[in-house]
Image (tube, one colour):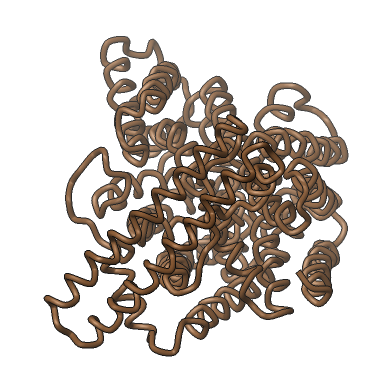
Length: 570
């Protein structure tokens, strides 16, 4: 990056951090620190909810996902609008009426302390691990630019987020996210425009999309019902609905965002805003990845996008062999480029026979280039068995740093940093609130002062920040970050959602039955996930339904001795 880019990057990041701290004011109690005094308008709530979900992983991995696998990932979000409607009708009014700090407080009132503690624990495990992945995403950028190990960049990013989250609390998070999302929308729009502008003169926007479609990258809709296919209309509508309902309805990182709304109506409007905007936003981000794919049909891409790993092998005894493969790859690309131009001409001619022939020729040329690339990856693994052989997270980053003009590179780098900071700050805030409200205040020290709880919240933020940094240092081993976060959530969200569904709708089932059902369900889901027995998106629906059935069976076989447990009516 140029000096101009570094200046843009630095000014953007530190200006937003200072703005958030300034707007947050002085937190005097736990309500201000964790809930922002429950005073924010709907657009704050909506953008904060979106920013919490749209981490750096979204802007790094989603274009890379589309580059390698096409548009089908957008189906993952098809259940989101339905989930927002259910939340607005059921979850939001109950949480607001009870004035809870966390979603799990409600579970003790409905069931018992052990059920509240178990669901809190499951959330802390899931959110703590996945937040580490979101911290790792921007560290990739710094490590690529500075040519240093991601360990050092991970420590820097994690430390920066901890500082302003500890000081500013929930309101600092919300205000920074408002500004972050405005900059993100602008920057990603400019990136999409520039990709189209950089295409060869004979390649129009529509021609590039048609070519990408012929190469299997415009696979937006898949109507086939296949439990082993991760992304179809049905997995998105059914599995995605359960995942989104659990994420937004029971994950404190999201519940804490809309509990800051000044009223039930403001929180509802914020969630509806998220449901309406999220799918088009994700579609456009994936579309940028498809356009980058089209761009690289006419401009030679790196044989391997992760330049840190490339530099490592070029320092090894396999350097000459790698360079020979790289030369072969260049020759294969030139042949592929010729076939790509022929396909564009065929598309412009609208002759289907000619299009079909040109498409097949391009696929043959592409397969030859892919084989050479695979040989290079195997050589990397031979040199270092621990080498990261999945470079989809680096595709968009490589394009940005190599082809975009000065100044805009810094802005797009800032966008990815800001997205990570926003989602990470929300997560740390939610981890702190759950630790303090559901564990420390309820079990460890229930009679402390407000100042004591405020100090405990800040200490919990630091603790979870360090835990998440530790997870981030491991994240390089888990492949595509976007899929990893969603897969990790699917192991736990279904169980938690099942607990809340029983709490809201099945009033006769008591705490002990739910607690036992949750333990059994989580064990089954982990086994299914470990053996990859079914596509991960379905685990959310299976987990929720399985818990409901097991809890019902237990309650029928062993009816409660008394009805003393307090229930909350809907």
